[in-house]
Amino acid sequence: MRELFVILLFFTLVPFSFGQEKDLETQMQKQTIRNTFEKNGSNYIGDDKWDQTFNNISHPLAITGGAFVIGGAITYVVGSQNNNYQPDNSTQYIGIGLFAAGAVLFTVFSTERNENTPKRKKVKQKYDASDWEVE
Image (tube, rainbow, N blue to C red; front, side):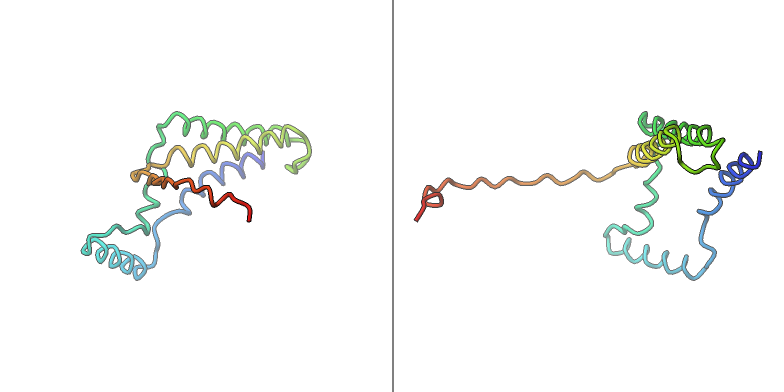
């Protein structure tokens, strides 16, 4: 029962730890920097880059990743009922693997990408036989 309480407490307190900054000066400085970049017409890649991280959680692989995270956590807890939550058996290692794979899937596929990757230009080199001659 104590473990269930700790898990529920963790899942209720973690979302509140990522709140707004309480320091008004820091917020004002960041807003000033944003305004400066917007006036110059350039893109500000400060905090706005992090605003794109979990925009697309409806992606099928992001949903699968979320299911893996929950399934991995449950598998780990079920496998560790008898040994004080220290990874000893294969069920716990499977839970850890599912959790890690799910976290990666969820993070990668829930991120909105607005910029395309630049394509490399291939430079053809002319064949010169003298480069291969042994002197």
